[in-house]
Length: 111
Image 1 (cartoon, rainbow, N blue to C red):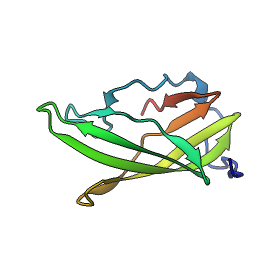
Image 2 (tube, rainbow, N blue to C red):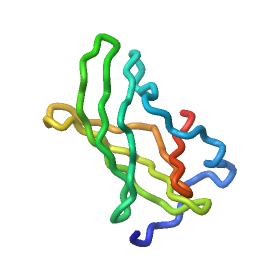
Image 3 (cartoon, rainbow, N blue to C red):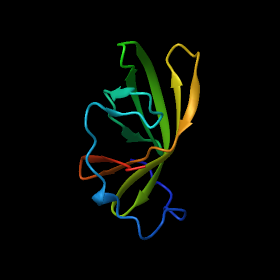
């Protein structure tokens, strides 16, 4: 793994190991009953990235990918400032969702 920047902007009081482990699926931060499936971020080249599916309650499936900034913090890697895009290129955006990876455990932010 390449050297990652230290988390100067991360709140010192936030304990990322208290976040719940990621489940599959989990609710989208965008709401609307959309569930996120196959979310498995990996760290490489100073970034966290994964492909995933967003599935609406009616079964409509959206295939997406996301790239986060990766920062070393609390003995692990914080994936933040995520930018997602649809695999067909028709949609893109950002997310407040963050992931903390340490000792092989991936945890999702409560916000």
